[in-house]
Structure formats: structure tokens, C-alpha cells
Amino acid sequence: MNLMTVDGYHAKIEFNEETDQFRGEILGLSGGADFYGSNPQELRSEFKKSLDIFLEVCKERGITPHRSFSGKFNLRIPPELHEKLAMIAEAQGKSLNTLAQDALQRSVSA
Image (cartoon, rainbow, N blue to C red; front, side):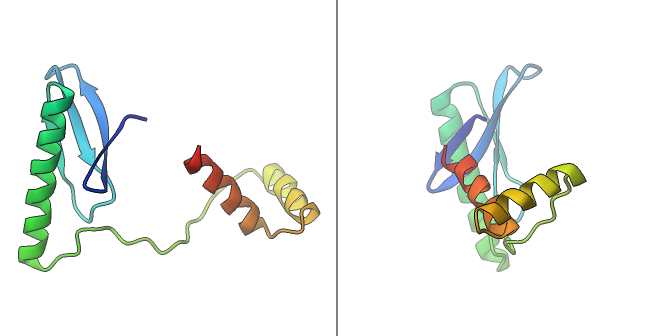
């Protein structure tokens, strides 16, 4: 995945063939904010401008700029996979939740 980071905020970057520009979408915000640029320097500059405007509007309106997360989500998997994971977790002396959390942590640390 193509990510860019500015001031601790992350954006997903994609190329738009129609406009012949890169489009960035800032992730983890309580609202939408995007930006465009033709090269990495312009993209980074526009990211900063878009982020600053978004944060200023949030401040003016008393809105929390970051989307909040509960730490819970539902995951639907085939029953056969559920059974295999439950057995592996039990064999390792872990809960299924801990086994899944460990695997997810490894996927974002890699």
C-alpha cells in the first residue's frame, strides 16, 4: 500500500489516470480530507495544506478530528477455519482473541 505520513497523520496515495495526478486520502479522520499533486513534493505540500485546513475547521466547530475506535470488531470466517484456530489457540494455551490479536499485530509490524 502506498502511504505518506505528515505530522503523524497517514494518507493512502493512488494515481488517477484521468487527471494524471496522484490523489491522497487522509486516513483515520472523523471526516473526509483529500488532496492532489503531480509529484511527491507537491503531494506532500498539498497533504499538509489539506490537513491544516481540516484541523482548523474541526477546532472552529468543536469537532474531534480523529475517528475513535472501540477496540472491538466482528470477523466472519468459515467454520472450518474457526475450528482450526480454536484448536491452535488451545494448544498454545491462549484464547482465540489473543491468538488473533498476535497475528494482527504481526501483520502491521511487518
